[in-house]
Length: 402
Ligand code: PMT
Image 1 (tube, rainbow, N blue to C red):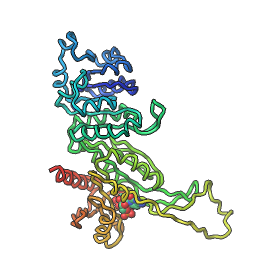
Image 2 (image 1 turned 135 degrees about the vertical axis):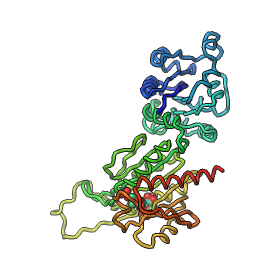
Image 3 (image 1 turned 30 degrees about the horizontal axis):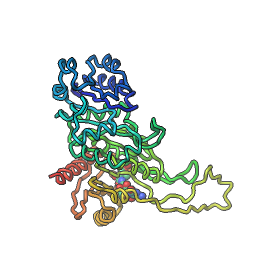
Image 4 (image 1 turned 90 degrees about the vertical axis):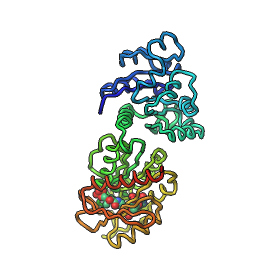
């Protein structure tokens, strides 16, 4: 990663206490950092600390003769490779969205031609407010990049979306924005691995998915500059670089994680092997063989929700890629599946072969579109299959934007 000049615009929120850590992490990557603060931000983080860490004067006044004399706000805007807004408060994003320039930070944001990355942080109700969501949409349409917010316990005592992303995630997003990869404006949600549906505390129903296919897609999307969240079922694979990973066990947990992350995603790739059924009840301790009255045991299975179908029902402008594990009549079954589920692309693999599908390092797939057209991607390593799938995703995005 080439060292770059980052202008860090700090908004006035409690999350500003993480800014010194963020500055240090950016400098550790070789970037030079200069800070501009709103008046409110200076209440939450000491300008002196930021000046000491960056070795650069910290500015907060727009029309201050001595400050403007040293470097005026237009030069601040011009001399940056990236403007990073952290924390981006609801108020600051509203001012960005509506082109206000009544303080130094908003004036710089209006004047800059550099990419802008925001790391929002606020109360969950402020985040969910239609005004904030509309402002975010305006910013997104103008190409403003975003990292977070994360869900969790908030400083105000509420729980939910609104925590500023961790400094490491912000640094990764800044590096992606600076690397201008072909997917650097995309947020990709990938599911991988198999779900496990418990029978009792030690036994469960699962499948042979290793997670390799989904992890390859996540790694390739990150390599292309996308912000990637990977929701992983049972797997022993290490997390790919620059990917945020959420581990889940059951299909219901996977569904909850997918729906939680869906809002931020512009692309969804569902490579996970989700169990279609789960035991109606799981015993809360190990079932002992001796306690059974006969040698047979019956399990009543109930249907799990179809996560892919639910995602497709809320698709909006997202591109959704589904997978299909088929053992026979692959093309016809996959064509029926894409119609039923409603995704933009279906990756069908023949799982009756030993060299593709479950657990293998390679895969042979058919890429099927809603009109029934088929592209044959012959046997190759799963990393190459992942690359092929993302080429198609980028093509669909390009056609939509044209
Ligand atoms: O993990 P690997 O060992 O690398 O193996 C890769 C793979 C074979 C698991 C992968 O390539 C694959 O085919 N994944 C999908 C497996 C599957 O569940 O297929 P399906 O035909 O049953 O489901 C179709 C689609 O609906 C899938 O995108 C699946 O994620 C989704 N689904 C299924 C059931 C359900 N309840 N919810 C879902 O979202």
